[in-house]
Every structure is written in structure tokens, then in C-alpha cells.
Amino acid sequence: MGEAVAIPMTHGLLLAAMLFSIGLLGVLVRRNIILILMSLEVMLNACGLAFIVAGAHWGIADGQIMFMFILSIAAAEVSIALGLLLQVHRRFRSLDIDQASGMRG
Amino acid sequence: MNTLDLFALLPLIILTTSIILVMLVIAFARNLALTCLLCCIGLASTLLSIAWVGSSADSGYVTPLILVDAYSTLFSGLIVAAGIFISLISYSYLKHRGENQDEFILLLMLSTLGAVTLAHSAHFVSFILGLELVGVSLYAMISYPSKGLFGLEAALKYLILSGVSSAFILFGAAMMFAVLGTLSFSEMASSAQAQSTIEHWFILIGTTMVLAGIGFKLSLVPFHMWTPDVYEGAPAPATALLATISKGGIFAALLRFFLSFDGYQYNLITESLFWIAILSIVIGNVLALMQTKIKRVLAYSSIAHLGYLMVAFVSASILSGKQLAIEASIFFLFAYFITTIGAFGVVAIMSCESQGSDKDEISHYQGLFWRRPLLAAFFSAMLLSLAGIPLTLGFVGKFYIVAAGVESELWALLVAVVIGSGIGLFYYLRIIFSMTTHTDSDEPIAIPATGGWALGTLAFLLVYLGVYPTQVVDWVSSVAKSMI
Image 1 (cartoon, each protein chain N blue to C red):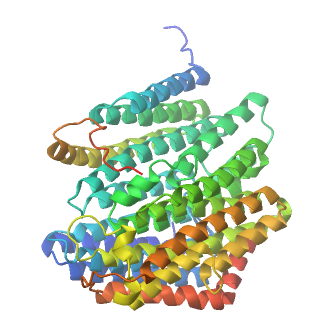
Image 2 (cartoon, rainbow over the protein chains, first blue to last red):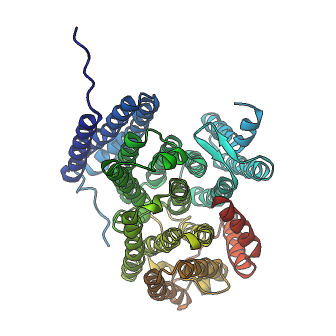
Image 3 (cartoon, each protein chain N blue to C red):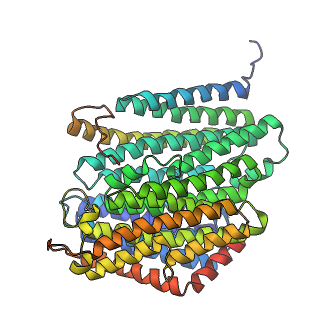
């Protein structure tokens, strides 16, 4: 076995930044609520990846602990979001976010 | 962790215990009055313990996450007191809205806990946890009691935008963590010195992303788009909570972060905060002119008020005016809490008999002075305080903001404050005038006792502290001195 080559921190952060941008783009352009929530999840997990990469660079556990918090936060957020989603589907008979846009002013 | 640490954590422990207790009681006996009573007892004993801990415990870190000091005592006291008032108003609001409304009270306590955590946070972990606790409970609160479509739409909008802003804060924190190797605010400050250019940019971009996320939550221009829709769609007590407890807790954490990290050392950030303050004041006030619904007026006025708050926040960047600026922002927030809960409380009381959406058209309030003089007087007091008329707390708050701006010699911001207040006067007075006109409608308006007393107390505090603000001023200035 050859010596393990450490991945530089910048590469990991770059990947995380790309995932974050893809997620943000998804939230902005998607009109289906489920896909918006998935994009949101991608954004949150990109943050988690960035934390893990940074934590590995410093050799401390803070990054991984933060990732666990992010996981639980995302789970809480999604559980409420799915509850709302059921309501939206029941009321509007559609999951299009533009359908649920009645307030103006 | 020793006994002293546990003693310092007493407010958080009592609040958490009472939340669990309320949750169990709801599982066994659904009774709104009982739930509300338990909630008020829990919050009141938390308030007492905050006072006790604040007066006797030494300030210091309890675990690296939580910092207990005069600042956290003041903010958590303010937040819990606001929670009591909002729960009293919610009781009156929810009473006639059908079965199974108890969880609203539970969610209210949870978001209060989140905001108290924010006020104590000195580390990104506790900051994010507090932030999400407030946010996640609010999503449910916004859509919970109303059966209308607007509540659902508002909750969905708030959920998506708040999720995105949390992701921004997290990514910004990750970038700062990558360079600095710590997530604690004060350790970040010491390792932020002596960085190379590229690392400097990392910190700058990270701080900017954190600020953008917080700007969303505080609804500052250009991140304000969601505010009017969410305020309109949410039930009035939830809006009151969103406007006060949520924003107050986040601002407390933001100010602590900026003071211990010394974010003001980056000119780019101070400069952009400067423009955010001006834009929030101008755009908030101008757009409020065009609204016909009271909740939307209050939404835009809250954007403007957060703009005034940012004036004090920016003033803290100048060293000589720092203490006064901190003092001003805390006092202004205090005045904003009382006034905003009062104003949304009136909307809640007006709508507590209606089953559907809230009564928030200005026409609903026509002739209120002839039909319900006391309620109209309370509402006028709140609106005059928002406008910053003397003898109200809002005037003292705005006076403080102007004083902080003068001390730091930020004249452009002061011009914005003056222009904004001038425009503001117009739309607040329009509502008051509409309340004085005669109307043929003699639809009865019932004022429930609990909500009525809560509003009366708020109106009394508003005027009393507006005339004799000395005690609060002394308290706030001693806290501000301890933060330097």
C-alpha cells in the first residue's frame, strides 16, 4: 500500500461550494415543492461537507459534531416541510409553488 | 460541570422542564386554559430564575457554548417577558378557533427557548441550534391555527426562505471555521489576527454570508421580500412572535458575534451594513405608504424599524461611540418589543371572534374610537410609539438611535432616520384617523379579559416608561458598559 495522500482542504471546500450553488440554483428555478425541498437539503449537506473538510484539516472533531447537528436540523426542517406539503397538496391539488401564491401587495 | 454551572443554567433548565411538562399535559388532557396557565407559570418562573441568576451568579462560560452574563440576562429576560404577553394574547385569540389548539402554546414556548439560547450563545453550535429552534417552531405556528390558505402559503414561503438563509449562515460559518479552526466567537477573534490575504478573503466572504443569512431573518432590505406575505398570512400572535422574539434573539446573537469577533474591522462589511440600514429605512417606509392592510403596514414598518436598529449597530463601528451605540440598540429593541407586541395584540384581539383570516383591513378599524374607545386608545398609543411621538417609549428609543448616530458622526444615516420618521408619521396617523371617523356598522366587538389585560399592561408600560425611562436606561447602560 502506498502512502495515503491527503486531499487538500481547498478541493473539498470547492466541491462543497459547487454543491451549495447547485442547491441554491435548484431552490431558485424549481417550481415543484418537493424538488425545492431536495435542493434545500443539498444546500444544507454542502454546508455539512464543508464543516467535515475543515474539521479534518484542523484535526478536530468540531466539524463532524457540527455535521451531526446539521443532519438533525435538516431532519426537523424536512418533517415540518412534508407536513405542510401534504396540506398544500390537499388544498391546491398541486405541488406547484406558483399555485400557492395568492397574496399580493 | 459543577453546581455553579448548573445554577447559571437554571433559566434554561426550568424553561425546558416546563416545556416537557406542558407536552405531557397536552398528551393527557387537552384543555387550552390549563395549557396556557402552565405555560405562563413556566415562563414566569423562568423569568424569576433569570433575575435570580443575573443578580447572584458570576458571569462566565458554562461549557464553551453558553455564556451567562449581564447581556444574556437582559435579553433572555426581555424575550421571556415577551413570551408571557404573547401567550396571554394567544389564549384569547385561540379560544374560539375550534378544538386542538394547545400545541400552539407549546410551539410558542419552544421558540422562546430557542431565542433564550440565542441570547446566551457564544459559539456557532449554540447559535445555529437556537436559530433553528426558533425557526422550526415558527413554521408550524404560522400555519397551525388558521384553516385558511394564506397561512399555509405564508408557512411555506417562510420555511423555504428561512431554510436557505440558515444554509447561508452555516456555509459562512464553515468558511470561517476552515480558516480559523474554531467555532467559538471569542477564539475566532484571537485567531483572526495575522492572516494572509487569501485567508483574509475567506473570513470576509464567510462573515458576509453569515450576515446575509441573518439579514434574511431580520428582514432587512434587500432580503425583505418575504416579510409582508408572511406577516399577512400568519395568525396575529405568531406574527407578534416572529417580529419580536425571533428577531430580538437573532439580533442579540448578531451583536454578541460582532462585538466579540470584532466584525467592524472589515471596512467592506461596515460599509455594506451602512447601505443596508439606509435602504431598509427608506424602502420600508415608502412601501408602507401603499398598503391597505394593517398587518402589511406593520410588516413594512418593522423593516424600517430594523433599519433604525441597524443605524445603532453601524454606529458601534466607531470606537468612541461604541458604548452609546450598544446602549441605543438594546433600548430601541426594548421599545420595539413592547410596541410591536401591543400592535399585533390589538389585531389579534380584533380578530379573536372571527373564524377565518384575521381582521386586518384598515376599514375594519373604522370608527373604533366610538365602538371600543379603550382598545382604540391602546392601538393609538402603540402606533404613536412606532411613529416616535414624545411621551411614549418609541420616542425615547428613536432619540437614542439619533444620539448614537450623532456620537459616531454618521450624518447620512441620521438624514435617513429623519426622512423615514417623517414618512412613517403619515401612515401611522392614517390608521388613527380612520379609527376616529364615524361608521354605521355597529357589529359588536368583544374584548376578552386575558388579552385585554395584557394589552392594557403593555399600553401602561409604554406610556409609563416613556415618561420615566430612567430605570431602564440605567440598567441598559450598565449592560452596555460591561460589553465593551
